[in-house]
Image (cartoon, rainbow, N blue to C red; front, side, top):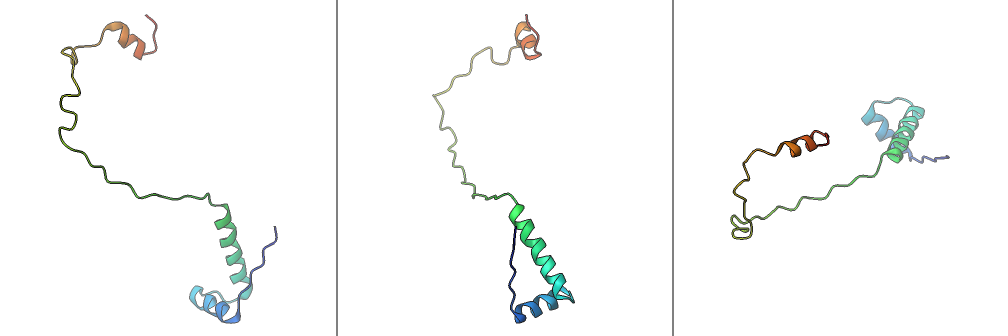
Length: 86
Protein backbone atom coordinates (compact mmCIF):
# COMPACT_ATOMS: atom_id res chain seq x y z
CA UNK A 1 0.00 0.00 0.00
CA UNK A 2 1.30 3.40 -0.89
CA UNK A 3 0.12 6.48 0.97
CA UNK A 4 0.97 10.05 0.08
CA UNK A 5 0.70 12.67 2.79
CA UNK A 6 0.72 16.25 1.64
CA UNK A 7 0.93 19.06 4.18
CA UNK A 8 1.56 22.67 3.36
CA UNK A 9 4.17 24.50 5.43
CA UNK A 10 1.61 26.44 7.44
CA UNK A 11 -0.35 23.31 8.38
CA UNK A 12 2.88 21.48 9.23
CA UNK A 13 3.98 24.32 11.54
CA UNK A 14 0.59 24.35 13.26
CA UNK A 15 0.72 20.58 13.77
CA UNK A 16 4.20 20.85 15.25
CA UNK A 17 3.17 23.65 17.63
CA UNK A 18 0.00 21.96 18.84
CA UNK A 19 1.53 18.52 19.31
CA UNK A 20 4.93 19.58 20.59
CA UNK A 21 6.65 17.52 17.91
CA UNK A 22 9.93 19.00 16.73
CA UNK A 23 10.63 17.10 13.51
CA UNK A 24 8.75 16.88 10.25
CA UNK A 25 9.44 13.14 10.09
CA UNK A 26 7.67 12.52 13.41
CA UNK A 27 4.63 14.52 12.26
CA UNK A 28 4.47 12.41 9.11
CA UNK A 29 4.88 9.15 11.07
CA UNK A 30 2.08 10.07 13.46
CA UNK A 31 -0.18 11.13 10.59
CA UNK A 32 0.50 7.83 8.84
CA UNK A 33 -0.14 5.86 12.02
CA UNK A 34 -3.43 7.73 12.49
CA UNK A 35 -4.39 7.03 8.87
CA UNK A 36 -3.70 3.29 9.20
CA UNK A 37 -5.66 3.06 12.47
CA UNK A 38 -8.62 4.86 10.90
CA UNK A 39 -8.60 2.48 7.92
CA UNK A 40 -8.60 -0.65 10.10
CA UNK A 41 -11.44 0.38 12.41
CA UNK A 42 -14.71 -1.38 11.65
CA UNK A 43 -17.40 0.95 10.41
CA UNK A 44 -19.98 1.55 13.10
CA UNK A 45 -22.95 3.78 13.40
CA UNK A 46 -25.62 4.41 15.96
CA UNK A 47 -29.22 5.25 15.48
CA UNK A 48 -31.17 7.33 17.96
CA UNK A 49 -33.58 5.22 19.95
CA UNK A 50 -37.23 5.91 19.38
CA UNK A 51 -39.08 6.64 22.58
CA UNK A 52 -41.61 3.91 23.25
CA UNK A 53 -45.13 5.01 23.75
CA UNK A 54 -47.13 2.63 25.90
CA UNK A 55 -50.65 3.14 27.01
CA UNK A 56 -51.52 1.64 30.36
CA UNK A 57 -54.29 -0.90 29.97
CA UNK A 58 -53.94 -1.18 26.18
CA UNK A 59 -54.26 -4.99 26.30
CA UNK A 60 -57.09 -5.10 28.80
CA UNK A 61 -59.61 -7.70 27.69
CA UNK A 62 -57.20 -9.24 25.16
CA UNK A 63 -55.22 -11.45 27.54
CA UNK A 64 -56.31 -13.99 30.08
CA UNK A 65 -54.18 -15.64 32.73
CA UNK A 66 -54.93 -19.25 33.57
CA UNK A 67 -56.01 -20.14 37.10
CA UNK A 68 -53.07 -22.53 37.52
CA UNK A 69 -50.47 -19.95 36.38
CA UNK A 70 -48.66 -19.91 39.74
CA UNK A 71 -48.88 -23.66 40.41
CA UNK A 72 -45.62 -25.64 40.58
CA UNK A 73 -44.46 -27.17 37.30
CA UNK A 74 -44.92 -30.89 36.70
CA UNK A 75 -41.82 -32.99 37.43
CA UNK A 76 -41.43 -34.04 33.77
CA UNK A 77 -41.29 -30.40 32.69
CA UNK A 78 -38.66 -29.59 35.33
CA UNK A 79 -36.65 -32.58 34.08
CA UNK A 80 -36.94 -31.30 30.50
CA UNK A 81 -35.53 -27.90 31.58
CA UNK A 82 -32.57 -29.73 33.12
CA UNK A 83 -31.99 -31.51 29.83
CA UNK A 84 -33.10 -34.85 31.24
CA UNK A 85 -35.44 -37.13 29.40
CA UNK A 86 -38.48 -38.46 31.25
